[in-house]
Amino acid sequence: MPSLRCINCQSDYPTSKRIYTCPKCSGLLDVVYEAPEFQADRIISAWDERRASPKPIDQSGVWRYRELLPVAEESEIVTMMEGATPVWDAPRCAEYAGMNRLSFKHLGMNPTGSFKDLGMTTGITQARRLGATSVACASTGNTSASMAAYAARARMNAFVFIPSGQIALGKLSQALDYGAIVLQIDGDFDDAMRLVREVANKSPLYLLNSVNPFRLEGQKTIAFELMQQRGWRAPDRVIVPGGNLGNSSAIAKGFHELLERGVIAKMPKLTIIQAEGANPLYRMWARYREREKSETQNRDHEGSEAQNSESEKSGTRTRDRKVADLKLVPVAGATTLATAIKIGAPLSWPKAIRGINWSEGEVEQVSEQEIADAKAMIGLDGIGCEPASAVTLAGVRKMVAAGAIKPDEDVVAILTGHVLKDPDYTVNYHAGSLSFTGKNGERVAIESRYANAFTRVPAERDAILGILGL
Ligand code: F0G
Image (cartoon, rainbow, N blue to C red; front, side):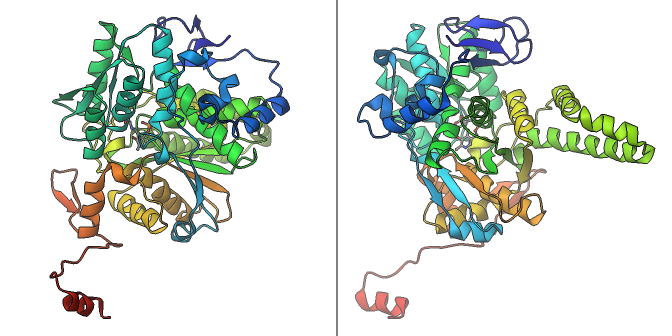
């Protein structure tokens, strides 16, 4: 039977307990599985066979992997056959990034157009198991769209807390259409997050943000499905956008569980990319790297061989301890046009850091200009995505240029949201009118380097032929 375990003090709780963090130390909770008898070969065959089955829970790219999910009766499962999303080669993007090859797993191809559906099927199913009739979340848009849809399927009431005027219209329209009660908070996402937690603690509302470990159980299947699509061969590196840091945490847990059970042979390097204006994890990581560099230099100065071999032996342990010492400092007034990841105080950062540590991963940041150009390039491969997803390509390009990623590495980037989520951004980019507010409140124009503006023409055949030069 799975249970809940605090990642901080290791206390265990039953999954029937309605808690989001550890009652003893407020640490984040994991769902853990005591299943030493996991037989990798047999289970992989079952997972492979289910891909051909017409049953909704087999078609679902989440419930297909139910041996490693919280138990639920089939009748309790709320699924929209989420998952089963494509992995595409992106030759133009590879060239743009300086890679030999690059592929994207596009989670925007889920029922509500983002990866949130993978976590919502498990989150809403758990809500139903606990007898909840009302669910709530704070959101930069996609979580609210997804929760609203799954709550509607389960006939539950959905309450969404969104930051004032800061979410893409496509996402807001979804939450309204799926019947959620939408509260626009006079504040940013971090305010909305704080408030929804306070309200959930004092009411019967069941909280479905990614601090809820049942959400992350669904999202970890991104790693499972990607591996299945690749014949269980792990890539060298997986690139993920970082906002509230639930998704990167979930993906890391997924890979780690497969590695522990002998399903894959290595852990891909988890590489999290943030927008420069909303980069608390990057800042923390940069401080850690600085400290690590200066300690190495000091050691080299001291230069005793005995000391060096001793430190090598205990290297992993020391890294674990040092990483555990890290503290995230929230970024006040986070800002980026990639509104999905406009978050200054991410909740799941300890799990994201754990994933980086497990996989010897990295954190990088990218500018608004880099995000906009990368998004246009992803469009030119015929794929398209919303702005937050494009940080992945921008990050790969930057890291290849810096020598941190080798051109022949096997890299998969995770696209998190559909191109139609934020059409304003796309149209403004191509029209040459995209701009953002800089650090000192000034307007900064984005250069539309790959602009594809539309042309106004008179409603006359000859004029059109003339303009087309035909
Ligand atoms: N990409 C998209 C399209 C997102 O919507 C989000 C998060 C992320 C990336 C970042 O994922 O938060 O797990 O690190 N959107 C949340 C929301 C915050 O409310 O829809 P994360």
